[in-house]
Length: 200
Length: 357
Image (tube, rainbow over all chains, first blue to last red; front, side, top):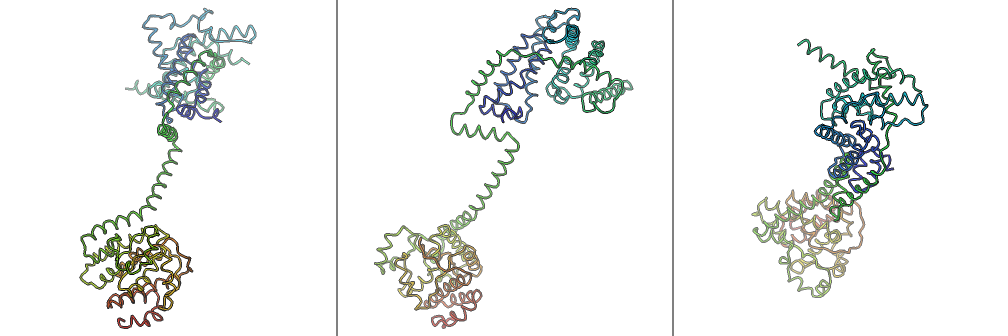
């Protein structure tokens, strides 16, 4: 079954002209990649654009793809580079407000909007909403280096070694960045740890 | 320095902590207080992790269209391009690449092994053939199966056979066996030349084995020669139709029983030993007669031996008739070694050979 094949085999199939293989790859990675970009940049529209752009680059680069390379490493390297470029562009245009950490008290913050919290009890819902907003704020408050490492490790379950390949730094540097990120987030989210523990 | 060492130690501790946090020690020992705190923090992240935003579906259609277009553009057009693309894609898989390499190596070596024997014989023959042009005429006549070496006189003596021959598919004319006997007689011939001649005849013999239908008839060569000597020379190759009456007439002269089908091993061993002993080459005789259709003959080791001995007997008779007793003695030694029973019962008692033995 083509659906069960590893990413690398699917990519080789797509190289040979099997469009169905690309469709499977797209279905598999679209959602996590979109959420990675969204959490990295905090902007839905840009996330959509960059998601498109990342997969377009996969399509264009398919011919040069070598099976020995891990597909996710390649895909997330593309996505991460797009995010870095986008961040630089924003900074250059002095759109500081988009990068600035959101105030937790501002419930209408853009990052909060991207987190759905349906089908929850109203009290729980409100706490969750607050928690999500706080987390998003805390994540946005991390430096770019720390944020990308944190997102890849925590939300994409990438091993540190693979993150090092994507980011292009030694594995120990990745771990150091992760350690700093966790320390920062713990300070921000300390009050929610009991809530998370009590969550059903 | 101490501060740096401390920092290094801290970094290592932090990295170990992260390994513990994200690796499989979740159900194991509780770990340090710091580890417990970080695990609680991760539980908070799990809330956020569980809620993932769905990307807009519109983009998917666009991407699929682009992917389809790119696949179309990439699709190879020519046959060679398709083959190449298929191979490239397959060989990118390490397992398939290894298997393909193994198949290639085995196939190539198999091909070379099967081809190598014939090729080396062919090349040896070719070089000897070229040498033969500069060599003395007897040696050349033995090696060179070109039409120029055939004796037309014999053909002229048998017009009935000629008419049948003209209907046969073109067969290479025989080498002149006289040269072979001359060579055995002529002590001035260099041993090296003799070896070359032997090699050439082996090469010719192997080529003739490739033409298996023709090669099966070489056993008749000595008989042919023995018969032809009465006509004062060697005859050009005659078809089966023309020869069979003569073969049938052979028993009156003590002709051999019909030999078994030739096996490569026997022939090769005979040829090898001939080269070693400097005896007339059997390979040259293989070229004397080439007929595609030969009735089957009984097989078996004794039959093969008798057939071989009969050949030597016939050759010895020819040599004896020409007064070449050296060749007769050489053949006698050979037959004695190969088939002592035949030697004592037939060879020694042959009236034509008595004067030489």
